[in-house]
Image 1 (cartoon, rainbow, N blue to C red):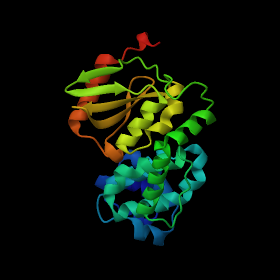
Image 2 (image 1 turned 30 degrees about the horizontal axis):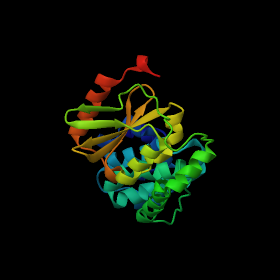
Image 3 (image 1 turned 90 degrees about the horizontal axis):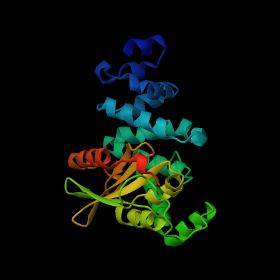
Image 4 (image 1 turned 45 degrees about the vertical axis):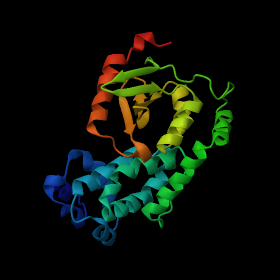
Length: 254
């Protein structure tokens, strides 16, 4: 990868990143960074954790909605700079991207990371408001009630695996309630759930909400988030794998 960077004339600042941290998956991130001027690169390249930094930038580019490319051009510098200041922000990248894509958010390059997260939380609050969700349902031409079943995924309404209770969220109301408890934007996935693109399950233990699971139309775990979009522990991930292996039955789709 180092030789490839040199061959394609990548800025000297990028070629100083330790070779052992570079991976083929970092290609798009490196291309985007190479378009920044040298002085900016000198300021934003971190002193360590280069692999994590490049992974986060790659994730930012992959998840950026196609209609938001103008945002992605200036936001690469923004996210690269903010991440180099605090690498623990890696887990919050998709939260901000969700706000840009699903929440129609507009990122300001002068904002701090905390300012962007404040905008995300304001959007989450609006989604947790039942009246706002009813307006969303109307905008999406939802003709039935707030409690109409919109999810027909071939999974049991409730199932217990490895001590964790998996509860399918089949209505707008249940999605809203999950978002309220977990402090995230799961309610914005209602249209995708209705169209069969994904389904959502709440994971609980002893009546306590532990995590929220997004399942693809093919029965694959797409996103798994704890409270406030935090990462989950390994036992939860293992339970999810077992749950889908045991209960996903596409032939029983309604």
